[in-house]
Length: 40
Image (cartoon, rainbow, N blue to C red; front, side, top):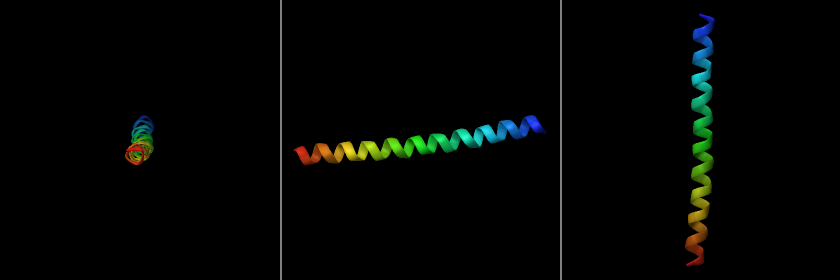
């Protein structure tokens, strides 16, 4: 059971990190696109 708990916690941790990276990436992308629009 301990191994299963470790694997499960690792999966949950990875998904949370992926979500965090996705949000940061989306935020930066939206900022960059808004800056490009302002330049034009």
